[in-house]
Length: 116
Image 1 (cartoon, rainbow, N blue to C red):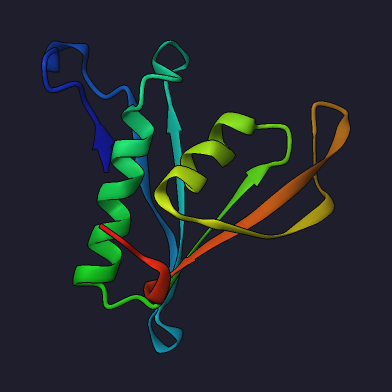
Image 2: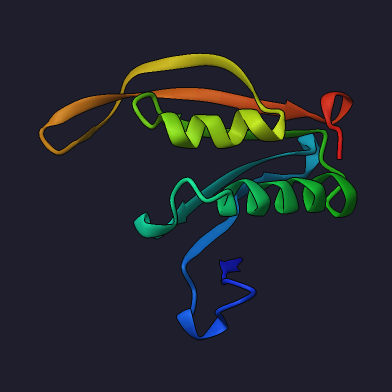
C-alpha cells in the first residue's frame, strides 16, 4: 500500500508498506516497508504497520507475521516492537551491500500475542 499524508495529499506517496510473501497453508506472511527520510520518527510508519498487521490477522486469517530489519536500523526495529513484534534472532552477515556484510534481526508477531 502507498502511504500518504491525510492533511497534505498533494505531497503524494511518501512511503509504502505491504506483504512480501504469504504462505496460505502455514497462515504466515512477511511484511516490509519504507518511508521518505524526512518523515522518519514521526509515528507514520508505526501507524501504517499497525494497519497492515490488523488487516493480516482480521482479513487474511494469519497466525504469524514476520519481519526483518538491518541490525543497525534501530528505528525500524523500534517500529516493529511498538506494534508488538518480538525478536527471534539474528542472521549474521546475511547480505552484502555498500562493500560490507550486514546482519538482519528477525522479528515476528503471533496471533495469540496480538492486541489491537
